[in-house]
Image 1 (cartoon, rainbow, N blue to C red):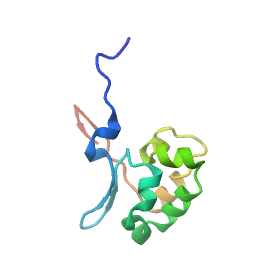
Image 2: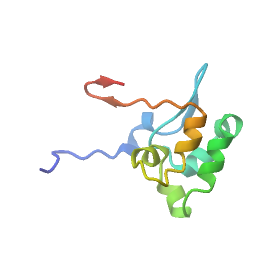
Image 3: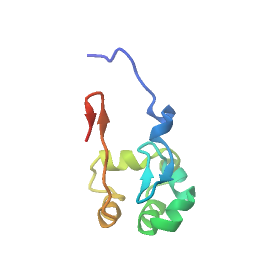
Image 4: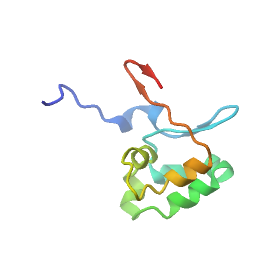
Length: 100
């Protein structure tokens, strides 16, 4: 069955970028690896994750690949998964039905 509508997630601002609140650094699921590495918050607070992303894939993957996509694929080569585990990262999943 085909979807009635397609949505380009990269155009949803809330899913892009790196930000900080009182206790956490938030990485939007559609933040590309290139955008992630350019963020000063990453250099200041997430060096282990920054090192993993720096070695992840080719230049096209850095430009188009996302942190959320790397998590979602659950590939054995999920380069961001070990550093996220070490950093005790949490994932927030949202849908029409709520947040978990």
